[in-house]
Image (cartoon, rainbow, N blue to C red; front, side, top):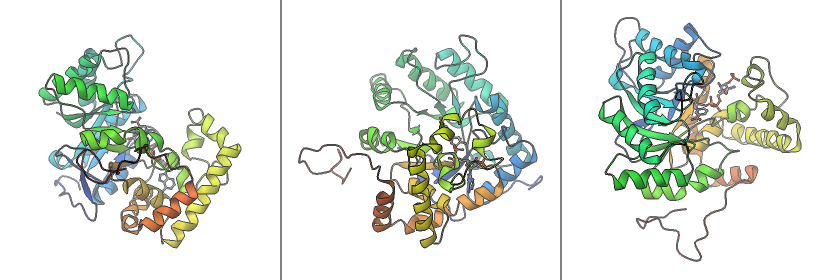
Length: 357
Ligand SMILES: NC(=O)c1ccc[n+]([C@@H]2O[C@H](COP(=O)([O-])OP(=O)(O)OC[C@H]3O[C@@H](n4cnc5c(N)ncnc54)[C@H](OP(=O)(O)O)[C@@H]3O)[C@@H](O)[C@H]2O)c1
């Protein structure tokens, strides 16, 4: 893939619309948190992105804060070095934490949204990203200022769409209300944590937003940072994420020693047995389970090696194996299904009259 521009081959990757937008995204995309530009630098970043691209992944997610800007730098460098055609790529980045600690260095003020977008584009060496995310809500800034600033970024051509990450349903409602009142563009998706041990927000709190606004999700940590691969069943392996970022994951590791943590590991072992029956790995089963959710637009993978990318993409083959019966068995193992909304006897239809909930 030296000087010749490679042609994108989606292979067996299914594509979905990102929320109610016209943008199509691969069901599995790749992100750079802690990995690309962080624990992985130089040629290995290129190898990971190359293998992803060759296996149908054309969507890459980063953020201004990842490795203090180095993730965006590395991703931009690799896209140039691999000569990937820009129109075939879906690039997303996220603003909130900024760089440095000065009063206007981060957050969602109009100032930081505009300056932060420009700085991210500069680091990546790109003219535009496809989607720009508000990495967190900023309750210190009026919602109208936030919605107007993201619309300005879109009008300028620096991003095609905007979206949110870890906003509450109430905050999303406010953003939609303001966008609709002022005839502005509303966010199209939510980047939320969603995995077998983290379900309430994506599977319960956001339910009305999916049917009302067609909101989609770009899910993160769908392997619970690796816990759902089974790699932490017998302790913390050297070079693993929990070992390399021991400070950040201090509480997670401490929890694994306690009864709640042991309970999770017991469930991972049971999932492994089910995965074996289905002829796949625990990781592929866990990832396919998130992708199987109809509100998931894309599951963002994280990987420290090309092998992990290949291994995790086996999830595509697991998707058709997740029959109602298998999903029931998974619920039997997890025992954490969020409570369905109380319909007070009304039929379970969404606002368009389609079966829901
Ligand atoms: N919006 C947000 O607030 C937010 C927050 C977090 C992440 N994200 C996005 O979501 C992406 C994915 O999140 P994540 O990295 O936490 O996802 P994840 O899939 O839960 O964890 C990925 C990590 O698990 C380990 N792993 C992955 N596949 C494996 C396999 N087959 N076998 C063994 N270990 C494996 C690797 O770490 P080791 O090899 O180092 O153990 C890898 O880096 C991020 O890159 C980022 O783009 C967004």
